[in-house]
Image 1 (spheres, chains in turn purple, orange):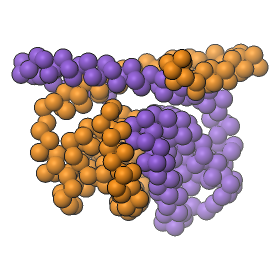
Image 2: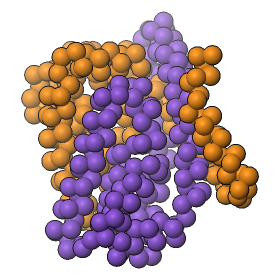
Image 3: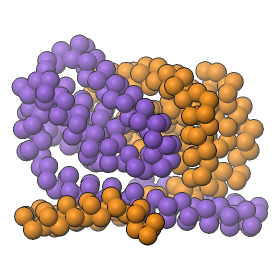
Amino acid sequence: MESGIFYAVAILLLIFSILKDRKKTKQAVMKSIKSLLGLLPQMSFILIVIGLSLSMLSTETISEIIGENSGIAGIAMAIATGAVTLVPSVIAFPLGATLLDQGAGLLQIAGFLAALMGIGIVTFPMEKQFFGTEFALYRNIGTLVMTITFVLAISVLMGGTA
Amino acid sequence: MKKIKKYTMSLMALGALLILYYLKPETAVSSMSISLSSAGTMLKILPPILLIINLLDIWIPKAIIIRHMGENAGLKGYFWAIVLGTFGAGPLYAAFPIAAILANKGARISYIIFFLGVWTTTKLPILMYELNFFGLKFTAIHVITGFIVFFIMSILMEKFLKGKKLDLVYEKLSKM
């Protein structure tokens, strides 16, 4: 669904662009192909790791590690799991809700989701390629701080305990 | 040789997959099928995104980005970062090329950092899911802490990345 919108927009823009300037359009298309090819090494790594992590971590294993009584260690594990796994958010939220039903703690799930969406250990090589090591490092550390703040806020405001 | 070096990490991951196949063939097979289906998603989503971005790159005048998200855009820059991040769709790595274009057009680094932060918390399609599964209170706390922490982070990171380091980031982004 999402990608359908992208294709529609891309095609409209492409038509508009061709009508306006063929040569510039061709350059843009070539540049797109080039950057896609440039991303392939990182992408292939990311894809293999997604498969490995998702196949080895079943829903039961995850809910066991980050159960309601797993405490601060459980929260840390939840954040670490979120940081290394790459699940599309569309799957992550239903998954989070399922885990919650299966006995995972609210704080653990909050940490898992925030880390999952913002911290990218596996995508780090790709981020590094775009922004350089230092930027990528700062951004991930900053997002870790955000994740911890979010867990604390949920704990205070929604009464979850570690 | 250089080409192979780029794939070192992938080959190592592939090695791990082979070991897994030796130990637990079924898990390895399911791992491979997950990888392939994710590859489908990624290859479906990235080409149109890259094309859109490169076409916008040609047709959006630099002056517009500088006016709205340039060095002196003030709070307006944060506003546009929220708009762009909220209407984004797709995983974080889909936001990287957008960040690159913004940088090339003269957007200030703190707005780009904030944009990435917003992308990781309040993308509209995901917000709907979150509301649905976790309720208003949880979602509101998520969005508000996200905005506050990423706002502070955008200012701090800009301070850390002054001068030469910052030039390096822009230079890297210009090559993408």
